[in-house]
Length: 161
Image 1 (tube, rainbow, N blue to C red):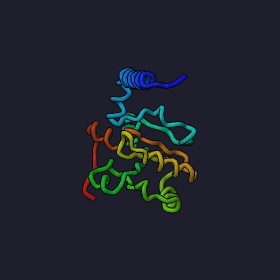
Image 2 (image 1 turned 180 degrees about the horizontal axis):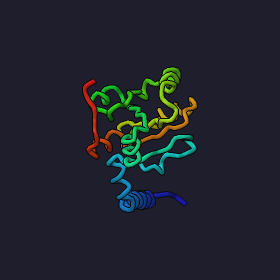
Image 3 (image 1 turned 45 degrees about the horizontal axis):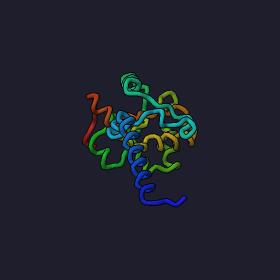
Image 4 (image 1 turned 120 degrees about the vertical axis):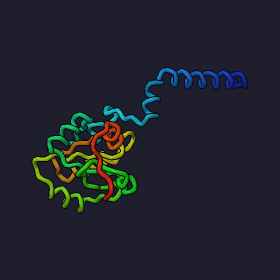
């Protein structure tokens, strides 16, 4: 069989229609991705063993009860804009196991470490949490909604360090 121009034109039309139909069928998912939402289902327990994902209500509860120690994994430039009151700045981009081991040793064992970053598609909090779990820290929580969700909810913020 010899492929001619008609064959390639029809193949291109079919490929184009497939793309259009795929986009139309997945409009809700595309909108969520454009907003920066990250479904917890995309975070695999195999990839991040020992890391527990928490929602805004859970984080609010930990904060209100004083049961959480908050670690902000964002870069310095973002941290300067504001943070969860009392949070310790531990930028993932510069975190190393030695400094994390020393940091983790300072925290009471009865407190949860709650790691957050910008929210949306930011994965620095997951990376930092995995490093902490690798060091043997047991109670690590990740707030995927992060700074964006915290601020949007009108919760207390701290600035000016």
